[in-house]
Length: 222
Image 1 (cartoon, helix red, strand yellow):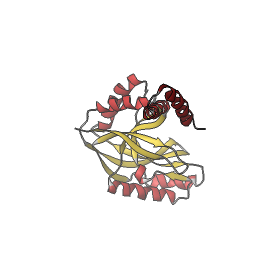
Image 2 (cartoon, one colour):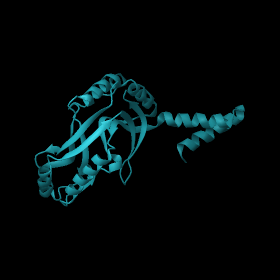
Image 3 (cartoon, helix red, strand yellow):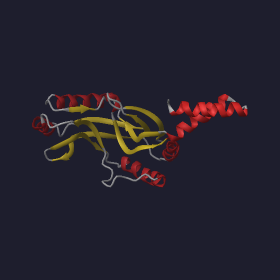
């Protein structure tokens, strides 16, 4: 029997004995369940410029045409991750929202240009598009997040912040030579621009068909 139902039945019997309102019992059980929930979440900037997404999709088709074993990122899921928070308690989300509410930045644009991959050499695991941000606005936002999320127990990656847009993940070595040749062929591709007027706290729910993202909070540029 589901734990939430068991808790509800037990509390219901106690409250019947105490003449406690059933509606309050349900609220108490729901709040208790939420307090134990963990949410996979991250801070990101959405990529939603239609022209840029079209160019990204074109690059992905070129990569897929090599016959390599790829899982491409769907256009609706395109985002630039600034900070991956991991699986965090539901209650901690409110503290993260408060931290994001203090971000200070003016709306700006960055450019997506250049195709590369991690980790390097003949090993290909992630294929990405580079980010050109001459004014350093993304680093400015990241520095503020370090200051605001640090007190909540979040630590920055030891590698530091390297802005990039994930285009695809490689699932096996099938077609590796053709894939490497294609990456070299399109390495100087310019994919377009993205206007940034918000930084979002997003939730990720993993499913067999891929992740499902939803917005939890948006810090707006001024």
